[in-house]
Amino acid sequence: MGASTGPDAPAGRPEDAPPDVGTDGWSGPLADPAYRVAVVDLLGVIAYGELSAFERLAEDATMAPTLDDKLAMAGMAAAEFGHVAALRDRIEALGGDVTQAMAPFQRAIDGFHDHTAPTDWYEGLVKAYVGDGLAADFYREIAATLDAETRELVVAAMADVGHADFVVDRVRAAIAADPRVGGRLALWGRRLMGEALTQAQRVAAERDALTALLAGGVDRPGMDLAAIGRMFNRLTERHAARMAALGLDA
Amino acid sequence: MGASTGPDAPAGRPEDAPPDVGTDGWSGPLADPAYRVAVVDLLGVIAYGELSAFERLAEDATMAPTLDDKLAMAGMAAAEFGHVAALRDRIEALGGDVTQAMAPFQRAIDGFHDHTAPTDWYEGLVKAYVGDGLAADFYREIAATLDAETRELVVAAMADVGHADFVVDRVRAAIAADPRVGGRLALWGRRLMGEALTQAQRVAAERDALTALLAGGVDRPGMDLAAIGRMFNRLTERHAARMAALGLDA
Image (cartoon, rainbow over all chains, first blue to last red; front, top):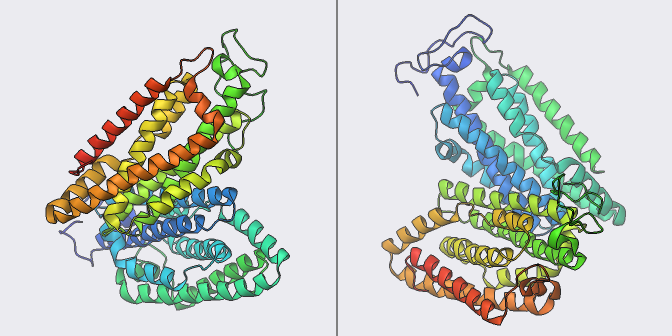
C-alpha cells in the first residue's frame, strides 16, 4: 500500500481513458490507494463468508439422510472453498493479506452463523440456498459499482455452486410429504433474513472503507440514500422469489 | 454425472488397445467381470474414506486456533473431496454406482471416526496426518497388485494434500511449548492405529471381493500369507516413521 499518497488522493480516470497509471502501477479507480484498501476490505468479507459457508455446508453434509445427498452437499462445500483461492490471489495482488483482510469480519459472520445454526437437514438446506443467495445478491449489487476486474472476480465468487436446483427439489419434496414442514421452514427463512440484516448493519457501522465503496468516487457512480433504498427493495424481492421457489411464504 | 457409463464405453481404454479384449470391451485383468466388481469395491471404500476425511477435516477447521490454520485445514479438506470426482468417474465407467459402491463401507469407516473423534485441534492434526497416511500406505500396497489404470488412479487419490509439512510443523511447535502434549498425542497415535486395524479387519471379514484382490488372479501376482505379513510390517514401520516425524513415540 503506497505511503506517498494519502486517503484523500484524487482518484484515477475511468478505464477507457488514456493511460493514467498510478504510482504503484495501477490504473483507473485502482490507482487510488483508498479505493484499493476498500476493495481488499470487500474481498476480505467475501472470502471469510465463503470460508464460513464451506464449514457450514460441510457440517450440514454430516446430517445428510442419504449418501447421494451427502455427496451433493460436500461438493457444494468444496466449490465454495474453491472461490477462496481466487479472492486470496487478488487480495495479495492488491498488497493485502488474506487473513488480515478476513479478520475484521469474523465476528459478524460468526455471529450470523451462531444465531442461525440449523437443527436439522432441511434448515441447513434452506440456509444454504436463502443465505448464500442473499449474500450473492448483496455483493453483486456492490460489485456493479466497482472496476471491471473486481466486479468479475466478485461475480465469479458468487456463482451458484449448485444449491438452487438441489435445495428446491429436496425442500419441495419434504413439504409435499409433510405440509407442516413448510410452516416451520417459512419462519426459519424470515429468521435468516433478519439475522443477515442485523449483521450487515453491524459491518456497515464498523467498516468505513467498505461503506465508502457504496458512496462511489470521482469517477465511479455511487449510491445515494434513495438508490440504497431501491437496492434493499431488490434484495427483498429476490429473497421472496427464492422463498416462493421453495414453496415457502416470505 | 461424470464419464459415459455402460459396458460399451470403457473410459480410458486407448483406441489402439491390444487384441486381448474381453467381451465387454475391457482388456487385461479388467476383462474379468469379477475383477471389475472387486475394483469397484476398492474404489468405493477409498471414495467413502475420502468423503469422510473431507467431513472430518472440515470439522477440524472449525477448531483452528488462527485464520491461517483454518484456511490451511479447509484447503486440505477441499482437496480430499477433489479426489472423489475421479473415483466416481472410474466407478461409473466400470458399470458401478458411486453411492452403492460406498455404502458397504460406511459402517466401518463411520465406526473408525466415531471411536477417534478428536477432542482438540492437535488430536485432529495428528489424526489427519497419521490416519490418512496409514490409509494411503494401505491402499497403495493393494494398488501395486492391480492393473495400471486402477493403480494410477489410487495413487493419485492418495496423494498427500499438504498434511505432512503443515501437521509436523504445528505439532512439533506445540510439543516444544509444552512437552506434556507429546505424551498425550503419542497415546492418541497408538489408539488411531488400533482402531484402524480393528475396522480394516471388519472390512476384510465382510468383503470377499476386496480380499480376493489381495490374493491375485490368473494373470496378476497376488499376496500369500507371508507377503501379507511383510506388508503389515511395512505399514507399521511407516506409521512409526510418521510418529517420529511428529516427535512422538510410536
